Length: 361
Ligand code: NAD
Image (cartoon, rainbow, N blue to C red; front, side):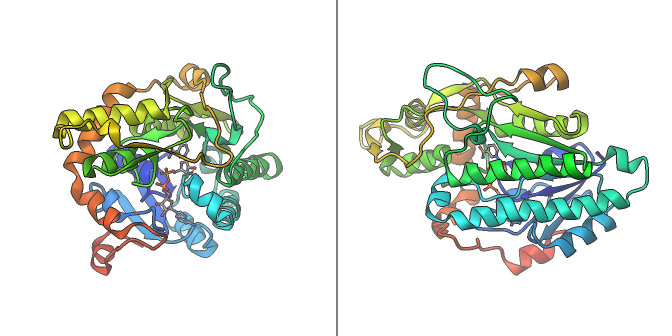
């Protein structure tokens, strides 16, 4: 892929993808509507690169997307734009249907028109890469089983149901219209620029500030953690080398209970900042009523992407978490304005000057 349209590139994973692809010398067009979860400062390191262009638009804006695909001769789409927070999906599911399902279908329509108009061999090389989650597979017992590419879909939350639906539509555009799609379903990511409403950054910032640290239920739920840069590298391999119509599961073989993760963060902040009034930060942990429909465990078998695309994660969870904690301790300028805004559904303060200075469409 030489010219890639990345949707949701101002978010956590999309920005890591933009940084990786720009560093590889590809032309990257980042399309993002900058919801409360999108932030231009996340893209600071690439915003002014000559091979990067930011476009402030919605994935459902077919006219803008169609014009961009044509103008930029896009030969690959990496679709990451989505509403992503499970708790928000429980409170307001409609927004998840609108963006994750309807928005994806609109994007598929624009991609199909573009692909059909391409001359050969560009037509043969074009890919639509749908970036999805392991949450579409639902709940695993705490002590057995892993997800594979053959696992049946059984989503539990409005978020995972909307991602499952979008996966089905992407496959349908392949089976029905021949659009060359690839799909990937990844486990939980962590790392720099993670929006502070998610477990790891929420806990890091709460521990820095000495605030109560909420943990759902007894904290026994298990997630399979992967560093965001390893995910970005895997996504690049899937769009470059994946077989059209195929799905690739991506995971770091790093299962941890939520309680273990929160305790590890408390200990790391204690080491970096010292105890809080003589007490360990583990004392800040508060067990709160469990999330409805809370899946017990997710675990990925990543054998297919390892075997077929030669991908392996470069970070192990223990050192990756130390680096992540250190990143939040040294990058207050990124998260302080976000935290101050309380990210209560508003668009974040993207100043007109920042947008004007960006290499945007
Ligand atoms: P995020 O919430 O950090 O970022 C989402 C981005 O999409 C934001 O920049 C937002 O502004 C943008 N966006 C939302 N609606 C849009 C719209 N209608 N048009 C254009 N842009 C829009 O999300 P993330 O954690 O980076 O996740 C990215 C993708 O990866 C999602 O599709 C998610 O389902 C998937 N995924 C996430 C994880 C994880 O652990 N975070 C794991 C597996 C898969």
